[in-house]
Amino acid sequence: MFRVIKNLPPVLCKHLLQRSVHQENAILMFVQTKNLQTDSANERFSLKHEEVGRPLYFDAQATTPIDPRVLDAMLPYLVSYHGNPHSRTHAYGWESEAGVEKAREQVANLIGADPKEIIFTSGATESNNISVKGVAHFYAPRKKHIVTTQIEHKCVLDSCRALEGEGFKITYLPVGANGIICLQELEKALTPETSLVSIMTINNEIGVQQPVTEIGAICKSKKIFFHTDAAQAVGKIPLDVNSMYIDLMSISGHKIYGPKGVGALYIRRRPRVRVEPIQSGGGQERGMRSGTVPTPLVVGLGAACELAQREMAYDHAWMEKLANRFLDKIYTKLTHVIRNGDPKQTYPGCVNLSFAYVEGESLLMALKDVALSSGSACTSASLEPSYVLRAIGTDEDLAHSSIRFGLGRFTTIEEVDYTAEKTIRHVERLREMSPLWEMVQEGVDIKTIQWSQH
Image (cartoon, rainbow, N blue to C red):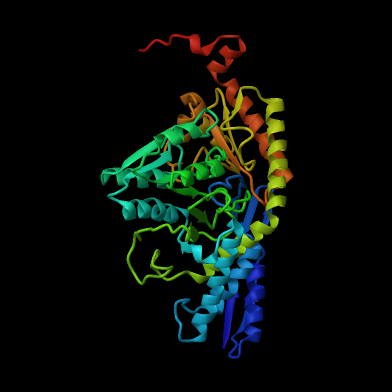
């Protein structure tokens, strides 16, 4: 019996061939591979005999490509170790369970937690929902107040709005022009009825890093639980849930070069945080997240966390080098460019720029050979200016001209140079077409003009 498999990536072919040799009842496989070839210079991508445009990838805050080493760790659990990790009566279940528990340790080690404090979810959105709604419902009606910020991820804000509909009181803290909260305002917002403070570690649109340790210390002193959405921070900056006084932390797999569809939630055990589950089922993950744990995805998340822990310092230095090079090129050639958010208290891999007198959508279309975003991937279908940029006081015209450049582990210097030069060229071209830019060049203060309506 022969099985023919075509057009598989080499790493998968290697694994399948090894498996066919070592399995007792091996199926002989004749694997025909066609390497996936990319050519950054020509921006072409060859796949299954079809030539299609393939832009450079600069959207690492939306998602990251899976690291080949992560895929390598996952493959045995996609092909050989296919047992249900909750099956306790045979070897297939034991193999999968061992993979899941190893991944739990890898996730815990990255954030300084105990493996028993890690539960697996489908991603940061589910982790955020469990944290916000789960804590709120468990401690109601005695405590029905939650504090968050105006620039949280949409899933946190929508969870809070849903709770408002149930009678909870939500305080949405403002942020300064640099995107960072005022700690004094946070303290004033806390009341004896406050059950939870939910503030993200690094913002997904502008990259600012909140003073998480100080926030955690305030919450601990008031005996209030502190949840942080760390999807953009885990594996990118050092995090320790104990020294930072974090009670709940949301983690995403696909933001750290792991697979999509998997995440984790850290829930402190001592002092214990009680969470009401938001879905019913078999009581997996200590009763807090029912459903069969997807072993290959969880193994991938664990491998991604282990890699991130090992290579964090190198990755961060690489992001700084790329970001500084990109910004130097932009600032040298262009004026009236604003970096949104605090320039120092920020993650270097997220560069959000507003190009005055340029429409952001026009610039995105001009830069079609670079995959970019004008904001969060969860809200990018809307043409409304970013609510994050509005929250930091950005003028509407500048908010409409913002572009997020997301740098990643596999971004190269050549790609940064190409993107910077292309951006400069198109900003200059679009400004030449703008009557407002012409007026600015002539020394006219646009803000003093009284526009007439027709």
